[in-house]
Amino acid sequence: MTPNPAADAPRRRAPGMSTEQRREMILQTALPLVAEYGSKVTTAQIARAAGIGEATIFRVFADKDELLQACVLRALDPTHLLAHLETISLDQPLADRLVEAAEALQAHLSRMGAVIGSLHATGHPPSRTAPASPSPEDRSAGRDASQAATKAALAELFEPEADQLRLPAATAADVFLGFMFARGRFPGTSDATVADLVDLFLHGALR
Image (tube, rainbow, N blue to C red; front, side):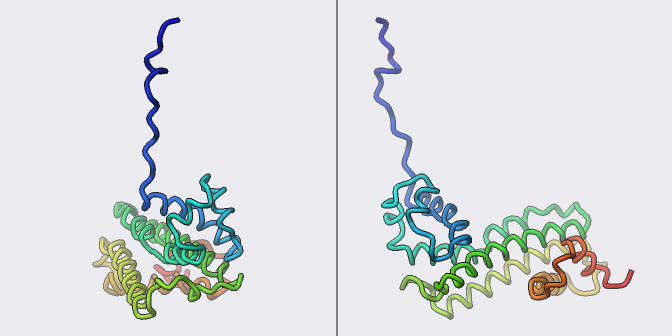
């Protein structure tokens, strides 16, 4: 029988994930489950969905409360939103830029609302979390910094038309952000498309 060097060679194990990579993978798996089940989701469900043992979760998170708090913080984190806003091409017409920005904002707000709303509905408000949760002052500062970064990214989308705007680009971005945030408070706007709302923002209510 001809020897097979490949078969005889010792097998190399695939490199294991770092703690940070494992944490990220667990969070990405947990977020949609928390949005669906709230605090009723079990770590066993999350482990099955992630294809890992349940004990692996507790090598990264002290307990389920800490995992839920991490999910809340991830849902609030605007990093992916800001990255999306930065990729919007300035070569597009302003209306197209704002439609893409509004869709990214809506996706971020929907994800945030689904996670926090589901936790609250299942009796686990975000304030009841692990001891390491940020203080109210830190949360407020973080929220202000996130809003400032979002407004700055939106202002860049207005800049190419700065000489045509009735307001400075930064002010226009601030108003646009408020306009999009307010949409969820008015059920009657649910029939309007994002493009309709952007058109209304840019050109007003008159034909």
